[in-house]
Length: 105
Image (cartoon, rainbow, N blue to C red; front, side, top):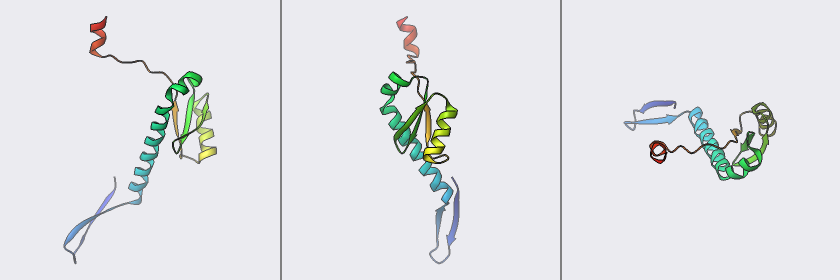
């Protein structure tokens, strides 16, 4: 996070000014979180029909599913613009029981 400090001698107070790069990073992070939340909401449906594929999401919407990460990124760049999308592998994850797994065995 880039910050520039400067002192306004007339007011006698220090102020912080955030750079444009910081704002862009915050926006990018918000977009990623929005896309991941959308993916989680449709995870069961995607796992049922597209297991092992890659989902492309943009602005909280599913753009498509693709057989490889290369196909997914190529399609994402073409449809959404370079870097304006996220990709997520569609896979079922095992449930980790941790210490309880030993107790149940």
